[in-house]
Image (cartoon, rainbow over all chains, first blue to last red; front, side, top):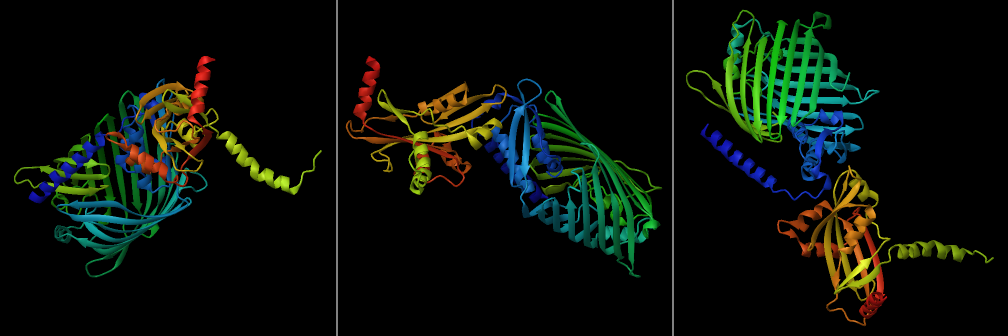
Length: 416
Length: 201
């Protein structure tokens, strides 16, 4: 832990140093720098693919004076994140006097291939989680193939390959199609193995699983997206008698996303969603269950400050396999707690809230949540943390709020 | 009516662009105190892609060099380099120019022609060392600044003139926008006479 603290300080110092350099920007010679940015617009398909940090930084321009250097930096980040051919900028008159609208236009490479690291995380308890993707884009078609090892998201550590095909224009820009195939090998923590022996609610441990998932998404309005499809999961049980089981589910989700701009210097962001995975015997599934998940995230940004609140609720009815069960105590939910101490098999009920305050690159958060199964009491747990975030990179330390000895969790990585 | 021969067509097709180029790129030269300056109402660099970028609200930096040489294509014996940043006010639809070289200054609310003229008027080469009776040529070169050059040209202390001269010593990068015009031959003594004439007239 001592080393973790030292790394946090070193990383913080280097990030702070980098930030100091950024302050030494050249003098702004653009005559439009006297105007205030009214809005920042970029194509929806680009907006949905860029990282949350970059999206937030773009939204931060609103209400500030137009600055060529800052805009160039952000355009370069968009180009690099999505591996685009060009990102050009247009500044046009706003609706209010002395205000301008910034429009970013992108040009895709005709045929492109890139390697990306969509996730990289070191967690002091769960170890390393990472994924590497190779992506090829041909027109509206995107193919990706990746390797993944993740010990953070679920109660299992899964490692394997995933392949995805995506078409972003089926007749219209509003209709997307996605087809995914995953094949993972699974490893289990001793706490989970022990808990599984005495539990009958969970569907048992498995040593490998495969997933085939065709999905279609329809952009009903600019803010509302409906997705539907099916997931066919097959997994081989770990303990004898070895047998293959399947969890085949109909999938649907509804997502509402809106940014409210123009209220003075404040920017508001609302993201709400509901998803349902319903496995049924009709789809030849060995499991029959319904997994509901509701989430709402609301953020307000003023200058260098932002405050975000995220609430998640989940409910599983019926008997679901372990990969469907909810987990708290990860790098993104109830940070600071050990997920195996909370519930080594995951839970079928979850309620969670996270309050996140950010000033510049300093991030302070307060998480609270409960995870339980029917017949158990829901016990609320709390955690506090502090971190440094720059672009997609974050280093953080989180502390569980509890009596007795407190062991902080250290997390460092990107896109988590 | 004279007969239009194949040779005539050949000469016309090769000669016309050359002649047009020379006419379009000719420079007027004048003496202003101890400085040689240029007059080039036909010289336009706020055009095409540069103008497009400006109208899109971006600022565009232009590097300029005014040089004197004894022959048209001989190496320069004297030169002046400078850097201008042009932007276009999207509300007022007027141009603004900032000179960031040795001399500094900013001017706003200009038409494109006035902005171009202001830049050219700020370019001057001193006459010290120039023989009174020897003819010389004046060459104006302008380039839209390449992003790769910017770091070397713009430093904490201002503009790096040595780097700027180096840039003009090398050919322009592929796809880098550039403009050029040549005037001459002229003699310093003639310019002085002209100046006296214009004063007395």
